[in-house]
Length: 257
Image (cartoon, rainbow, N blue to C red; front, side, top):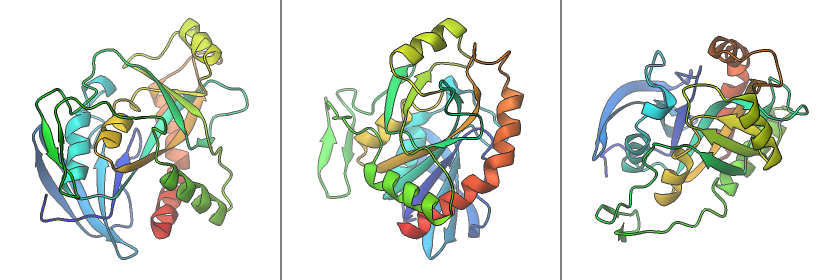
């Protein structure tokens, strides 16, 4: 384990490249078996916080090129008990308009070319309790997102009088292109509520590491076929407007942990 020991890890998605308000902030380079990760370490409400920009500062990495294993392992190496993420997503439902905040409880994975596991038959990890975990591991993902952390986010929203949608199904696609209207129609038919490009394998890797992980999704647009066109500029523009609210929701959640 790293000599730095954090309580909570934050992973910022599109448009969320920094958590303002961190005290005594320093940037650390965390070495992992999968590469080096740059993480801001600071303090908030007496807790040690690690902040990681999923796409890199300046949005350098597209969804299919993100080093998900290095990011997750860096949080594990730092000893994070909780990891809270943000995702900008498209809405598949008319009753989830742009600007909605959703805390998903399920995910459907339609990615194609990513590395989905630490456990390739050879890799071994020493867990916090001293167990060695490795070889071939079949992980139970009945509850892909940590319900304990989800409940804290929902409670934090109540404390802030913030209206959120407390559950939903996130459909993850490969990207970096947006989806076709036909794909969106299919995703709606199979029960999807949101569509994004970075939910998988992130959620599954944290499940393998036995770290309590949940995400705050912001619907930045209706998906393809539900509005005239979809653009990344539109995504960033709406997320930028709601970013202060998301930051407050994260901070209130940290208070409750």
